[in-house]
Image (cartoon, rainbow, N blue to C red; front, side):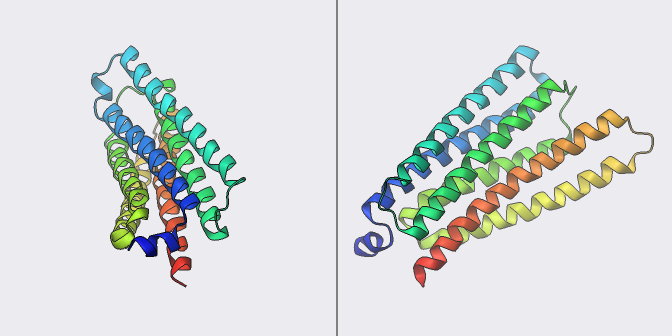
Amino acid sequence: MNQLMQLLFPTDDRKYFRMLVELSSQVSRGATIFKDFVDFYDKLSDQERGQRVADIKELEHRCDELSHIIIMGLNRSNTNVVHMQTLHGASSLLATLMDGISDVSRRIVLLRLLKSTDEIQQFAILVNNACKEVHALMQQLHAPAHINKTIIRIHGIEREADYVYYLAMADLFAVKQRDPRELIIFKDLYEALETIVDNAEHTARVIENMMEKDRN
């Protein structure tokens, strides 16, 4: 197995894959904070809401910095072409995942939502689950025996998010004489939350494509 891993992932490559694990762990942490923020939103004071958003923003900065370090390092590395494309794509998508989580949490506070909706709570669960699976996926790059199962789970979460999104939008537009401001706010939030889960699946596809090319 060690010889196989050396062939698949030379030393320089493995260093960057370890950095992806660290990056994905920060994203997963951010998703957990976001889920807790949504779960307890109604009970939090304005100050506590602001602190949760600040905590998530700090993680966004860390992810942006780490993604930048990975990409800059790749420009000077001996990483093979397939792995370089994968590392570029995965690190950028992971940073985008965290950006999306930070953006939604900030918008919820700035728009002064009175309470969290059932749909936002469902999305928060899916975002958290997707980010945890993406982190597991990055960890499994060093031992890819079960990587396909993780990828399948991520695809499943994305399909579930699509279903939640369609139901949420149907419900949103089903109410006659809904406040236009409320309609716009929740439409934008639901779209942004679905995009986060979509980006988690895109990350899985980048890894899936790399594994397929390595096998050929």
